[in-house]
Image (tube, rainbow, N blue to C red; front, side, top):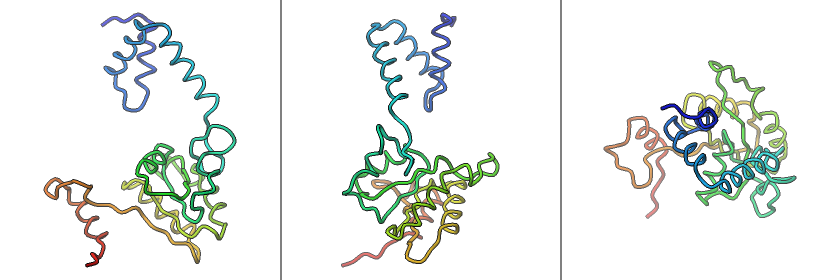
Amino acid sequence: MNLPKAVDQLVGELSKLPGVGRRSAERLALHLAVGPSERLQSLADALHAVRQSVSACELCGALREGDACGFCSDPSRDASTIVVVERSLDVIAMEKSAGFRGLYHVLGGLLSPLRGVAPSMLRLAELGERLADEEVRELVLATPPTVEGDATSLYISRQFSREGLAMTRLGRGVPQGGSLEHADAGTLRMALQGRQRVEP
């Protein structure tokens, strides 16, 4: 299909977004091109506003609007526990679980020698500064269960180990409502290794 040059350019930019393929980008671009101009202006204003007002928190790396993020500035959160995640998106996922009231630390990536990602390219120095505070008693390593995620967690546990600091890893295994017959061998192995005692 021969699209007008401006629409084709918009399709190209939209398809660079994560999770947006060429066909989805075409549908979005065509919808915007023929829709009301107010909708397009609202979208442009929202994109401009997010670029101007949202940045990474200097302390934890999570998204913030203003001087401090909502996590670091919240006195009701438990400062003795920090969850280490790869991206800001992971912070949002953790918050949706409503099961954690501590603080976060966003690494901004994972160690990957094959892709040229070295420790100095992650927010590890900032993590070390935070862990120098004796108030931090637990570091939850919530990197993804991949080769890079495991390597990053291992590096952190070796680099920042100190007396009085517990290093834990997120549990892995069969998901809630999942069936054993659909679980792969690795998932079942992790579930067995992470099993817990049942109290009568």
